[in-house]
Amino acid sequence: MPPRKRTAALISVHMDLGAGRRGVDMGPSAIRVAGLADRIRKLGWKVREVGSVVVAEPESAAAGRSNARFLPEVLDVCTRLRDATVEVRMKGGFPIVLGGDHSIAMGSVSGQAMHHRAQGESIGVIWVDAHTDMNLPDTSPSGNIHGMPLSHLLGRGLPSLKRLAGPKPAVLPKNVALLGIRSVDVNERRIVKELGVRAYTMTEIDERGLPACVREALEIASDGTAGYHLSFDLDGVDPHYAPGVGTAVHGGLTYREAHLICEACSRDGGLLGLDMVELNPTLDDRNTTAELAVELILSALGKTIL
Image (cartoon, rainbow, N blue to C red; front, side):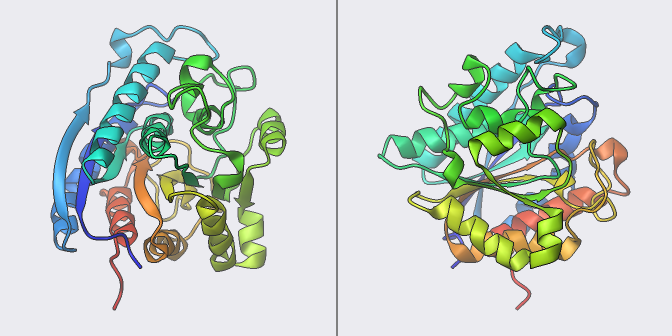
């Protein structure tokens, strides 16, 4: 069954401080231009405009430490996004976070975790990405925090970031599933294996088929939890279908495979909210990737062919 039609709360996070390339701060605007709000309403949902999380311009902030660039600014944005997510959930809304680079997931997922932890519950995460995003400052080749959010949500890394959800990790490794993985840094592989997170690589998806992998991923994210948050990095999709991303990697999910993931989350009924991140309009082709982002969100909200 799809998520119960209620209120979709739209939160824009115009941040590219966690990335190594400028432009994803304009992603939320491109998604809005593609008609997101009106198209959600046509599905029968109400729409609440939460507004934008204001972010410092890179030109007005110092990058700071080389292994965790713009750390104070990223922490501030994620803290405010966490609080906004909690507020949306307390009012019964379904948070849809528009990015922005993938570091913002530390805020949205932490907010989901805090909301449910107050009720004695835990959450799971479905992470769609070409990358595992599980580097640490000591292992990151670039120091860009958008390559580190999942490790911090799992309780590794910098104290200020890993404690966004409180003294305990936002989510347990046993309740996290990654889909579409095909680019992992050498030292990052060790962290993935140490934590025991289930990562479905494109090789496994090719060999077994995506439907089987998605079914397992949903079971992992739902096992003993109140539901799961879908964090969708558009570079998880092959650049043939999603050219407007900053860290494109060939050999990714097809257009239909990307929709299948969102449709499966909708049918499953455990979806608590979602992120749609890493859209870079400066690299897009006639807003193709923004259109895809809107279509994927609609699939997650229950849009079907028949």
